Image 1 (cartoon, rainbow, N blue to C red):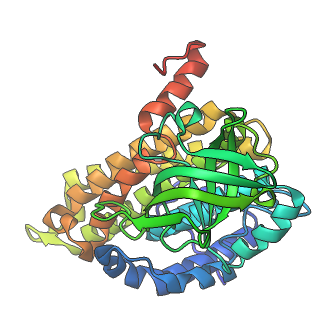
Image 2 (cartoon, rainbow, N blue to C red; image 1 turned 120 degrees about the vertical axis):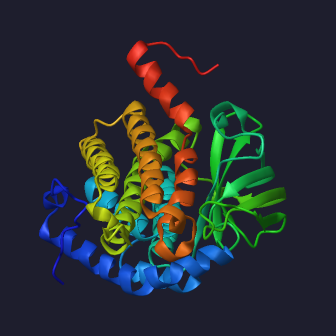
Length: 392
């Protein structure tokens, strides 16, 4: 399949990819355009997830880009980033679903699981046989998860008993397993557990009334004396530092998804500007519209340069928390500007689903907040550059 560069890739960043990677992106792009783009507005409006895309995404390799048992992260972080961007430029909810399945769930298993756990669970996630969720955030604990987790784990012989609640857990209304992070009552350390959602005492309730990422099935989870065997405790998750290692990996990919969201809104606005006629000519012929489009392209181009570099640093082992935090903070801020400018280009039509911009405009708000709020990422970077923590 022939790879066609995106018009929004003004500096030809995609030329950094090899032929195998470009072919994979071309195949994914063609499928997204033919099978996903035509249906997403309807599913977004109904706040439903199109379950029929789960298996095809697996067949395209979307859940297996992050791990190979013989060579961890065989696919480069830069390539994985372009995949996240490609998904988000068609629909941020689809990118979020894949980000949970591949980055958060398989990423957790890759980093925190034993060899036996990786062999048991990763192929099942990668093939789409099962769907996973990642349970960290709680009703009263979001940004302070490192110290503020209230969900508990108590060792009882060869089993663990979990009690607590989780909130905003993506995929959780239909997941087969959920990675639950809980504080061990014995030592006070955060540990991770693979919890089949059929386990007695596990309950997930869909969060209704969302105005952003409406296709993502976020849930409130309650855990009432949920018993899991020691074999389901993530053997290499012994403190929140191990949880943070997963988040460092995925935070950069959220930055990529933010770029994709900006690209999707910009492309929709550019198309509209070439078709909509006012004052006897297309609005793309007017100076103020061109100004909005150029500023949007500048945001996308600058953000792409940043996320590519932070992914290169991940591949080389140089990336630290502050690097991914700056990428997430910057890319999502520029995304927020760009989707607003796109909505301005489309005018009144920018608040209906017919022209795509409204969906990107609304979905950007969730990306701006999840995987670390703007404020938390700012404080992570601020601590790095000043040597002083200002979190409280």
